[in-house]
Length: 167
Image (cartoon, rainbow, N blue to C red; front, side, top):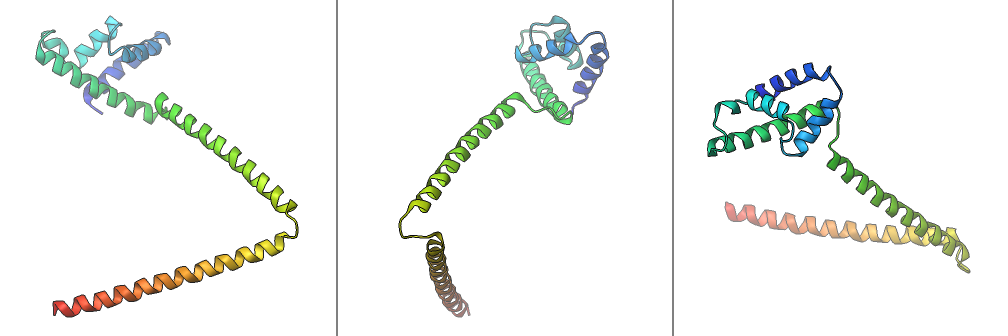
């Protein structure tokens, strides 16, 4: 964290004891693009050295933007140290949670339906279906193993040819 950020927060936190309203104000101040609260603007300009540059000049604008970026990054780092999650990150996680909840509900309904169909199917008992399923898995596993072995043989032949060509 930069020195000005720490100095700013040191001074600010000393003033927090004067009232909880200030934390609400700093949040609003940041949300409004560092404007609206002249006391904080003045402290910010002083701590970040902006009071030494004439306002309205390109240098001032450039320094102001850099100070804002530095401050926002340090503010985010500070909130991370406190275990505070930014609202946009929280809302994104809530959205993902809701999507996953819907997906799970849909999958549970599908599983329930498939179990019901399996129980109702005539002439097919679950032990027989499981046996056929096991056979299918074994057959596919054997075929996959044969495919991998074929690839290994092919790569070994290519490897031997490449080594022979290099010599």
